[in-house]
Amino acid sequence: VTYAVASITLFGTVAMLGFPLMAPMLGLDQHAFGLWAGASIHEVAQVIGAGFQNGTQSGEIATVAKLTRVAMLAPMVVALGLMARRRSSSEVAARPPMPWFVASFVAIVALNSLVTVPAEVKSAVALATTIMLTMGLAAMGLQADISQLRSRGLRPLALAFSAFLFIGCFSLMLVKFT
Image (cartoon, rainbow, N blue to C red):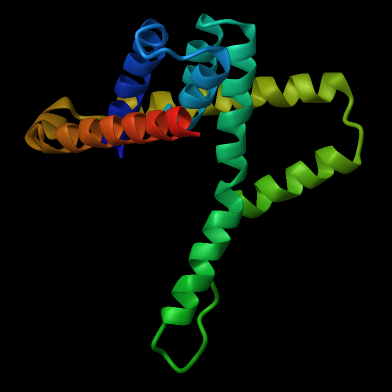
């Protein structure tokens, strides 16, 4: 898991710094660049960082594109769970897997859409979220054993790099052809 998170962070940082430099060479206007960044960079903060480097419109479009991808995770997990249930060969119908974070995400979205949450509460929740995410990533990093990461070799890094290239090129192709 640590290797995967490190790889995603590494290639996301490369994208955040490199994609804005490539936009003029690829003939991408702010709209197209925002879609490309939002569709191809994994972490929300890196999408925002890359998007706004290319202009306000680009940053806003990148943010909306990325958040749309995030919002589609919940229905995708449910759909995959239902497909797995159909393919189950057991006589007793298994319940589709439903990670609690998906149900919580949908509940928070619904609550935020139906109830006006005071700005102070949103601010406190955002701060708490940042602190908890930072603590979780720090704990993972502190628990990481560099020798174990090295023992995995370069194959996982090569896999992450090829996935990064594929997603970047495929999403660029979709943006250019639509």
